[in-house]
Amino acid sequence: MTTNWLFPNLLPEELLISACARFADRLAYRNLLGLNEDVFGQRIIAISSDLPAYLEDFVARLPGSGRPTADIVIDEHTQLPYYSPFILPNQLAAARQAMRGTQAGIVHAHVGMFASDVFIPPTLRLCAKCVAADRDAFEEAYWHRSHQLPGMVVCPQHAIPLWETNVATRMGKGRTFCRSAESAWRATTSAEREGKTLQAPRTWHPHLLAIARNVAWLLEQRDLCPGPESFQPRYQALLSKCGLASHRGDVDWPAFRRALHGYYPEELLTYIGCPMPNESDHHWVAKIVRKARHSAGPPLRHLLLMHFLDCPAQEFFTLPTDRHFFVPGPWPCLNPVGGHYRELRVTRCAVDFTDGSTPRGTFMCDDCGYAYYRHGPDRDENARYEMFRVRAYGPVWEEKLRAMWQNPTIQLQEIALVLGVENQTVKRRAQHLGLAAARYRIGLGHPVAPLPERGRAPYDEIHELLPRYKAVWLEARAKHPDWTVVQLREIAENAYIYTHRHDLAWLKANTPAPKRRPTPPTLPIDWVARDIELAQLVDSIAQSLVSKHGAAKRLSRNAICSPTKRASMIVINLWRLPLTRATLARYTGTEHTRPGEPPGEAPA
Ligand SMILES: [Zn+2]
Ligand SMILES: [Zn+2]
Image (cartoon, rainbow, N blue to C red; front, side, top):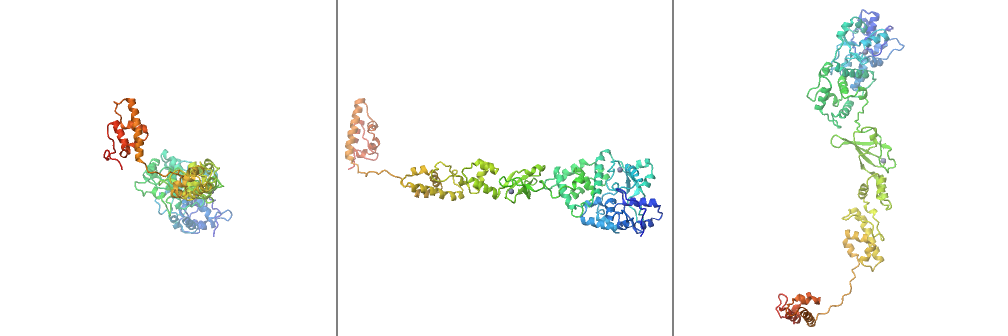
């Protein structure tokens, strides 16, 4: 095997075929098939400018000291790093394997170029300033790999338009070596080069330069191969950031198309081979934004989209792929009584969407059971300690509430302060835990302690409280067996009210009977004697009235009966008071009897 002692060192960013061309120039090869054999060990082969094969054979023929490996040649002198982020890792490995070996025909298939309709520049390009700089540094010009990629109109380093030479990018079989950059440059005049320099409107320049710089960055990466499925979440995050998709990832295609139209001139996209998407959803933009499994699609289209989304490739490939709406964990536990307040020990965050698009993160502490949530996405790192509401207080917090609640010397406000909630929340949680009763002092000697609110108490509370109040009531009765209800209520008012409210039957059964004054036995009324007595009384009253007002004035029955203070009794019983009745008639001029009773009829 020959050793190519005179093969030139590969220069920075130089295509392998460029060095081969310089070697051919240097040795003034006339028989190109012989040159093929000397450099690659094969006579009739095609070496492509972008993704050449036979690289193990190539490096094997280089002088031993300081010779690169085939992989270094791939990484630094071919365009494979440009395609690597957009294909599957196994495709990348297969492409590398094919380039190291002799499978020149399948390399392009592995990187997806056969399926791509992106325009590959047909001739090689040079940057006038790169030529000058390379001549200064290395005494000759050479073909740079970045200048030859799709969409490259300006030099990423010098930001000037490239010169389009007439040296073909693709070579037919047996035409292994292209012309060297130096000889292509020397063979033209500056006027000729001027005429063939790529001319684009001034307004396109920022777009073209951004693409060029992204391409240059991609070429510098080594084994950047995140997999095609990593693109969709990153695009969704960027699209939702600029309002073109919901947080959940639903893209507003009409708005997206309008924005893209406003951003890129239609002619620019056509010029670089990515025409503006049409009305249908199935255009190239939709294709590369949607989830891809096999290949992410042509790199140039991604670079256009990244630039539109104001995200350089360098930044794009560092974006999280699991769609973080919240700052990365661990997150703080915000339980004020958990014993680890604000310590970063929460590792679980569940995301759901409240109104279909607003992400809501629930952070759960496994140590104390406390869980809180907030709405995303987080604006910055400071959002880490924010919470919107508590979702679960957990056993530690509840135990603390229980302990404080049952201590009557601790004020409600103090409990609320310690537990980090409002007074009302303390009450609600206590009631929820069946604690509501515990804050009311029960027992003799607390006649004015507050009672639970009016109305029917919750079942749990009655269950706990009623027996205790009943015991208080029975204790009061046992101490003062001869007391009345009124007296007992003075020392056990709450017990009386509570049992009255919740178990009236029991209270009635356990209440001392009311003490009644003894009533004397009633004797039958002697109506005859009463009639005589009343008749005399009525007569004396009537006479005094007559002497007062004169005989001419007619007296009413009421006027005579009222002074007796027994008027109603007299009127009701007139029917059995014949003397009284007759006396009244004498003064009033009428016979008064009870309705239905025959006048003059008296009981026997
Ligand atoms: Zn340049
Ligand atoms: Zn906790």
